[in-house]
Image (cartoon, rainbow, N blue to C red):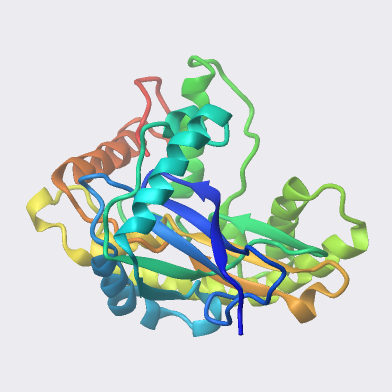
Length: 318
């Protein structure tokens, strides 16, 4: 037997709100929701129904990766009264400061379904690292004489604009190409920069163990991710009409915006590590979005951000 449960708000983004399950009494948690989170979609016109999102995930992304390397999704049926209750609590959270101001007014959609997701939050004695790999291969639109990858070119361009056009030193961030370099020492350097930035209180020995794990196991996951990014975008975006943009390009852009979660026990990280890709929500190629993608790419090419011959002519998009 299991006791009654309540939902506890833990996080939200532009499109979804995530809850964890908490027992009301001192009773075991139902096995069906143990180590699971509940993701519910917001009431916004651009967000597809939960069932549509689930079907797309199962068809387009789940087959691309090993099951143990992807955050699992399970479609469940919801009671409408649950959504009403949670929306009331969201309004209460706004008055207590539990929600960021930018999220005020956002409410959950009345949807027949929700998604149970693998719980990647860190438990006692564990540490969670979050890595956004971005573009793991050069943009097909980049000039042949490029010296910056797509991610680095965009970061430098944005830093330049934030500095008001001043000359600034290269700093911050990491080059994603280092994460999938054939040289394991390059991979270790890239992962070490990420780990030390997120957990500078860890011992040198622990950091070394985590870095070694990621340079091997993380490399395998990211190599698969890079392969599929390249598979779905072979020709780039410039010179193509928005009407010609296929679902493959949308899949590539989805894979360029996903997140890699890595968690494990600090006492034996390599033996307990769980490494999974998340945020694989299909990026539909709406005309406005395609135009934004093209504008960003055109800025990086025309203003010399790939080739380090940049000129100051304005900021690119995302």
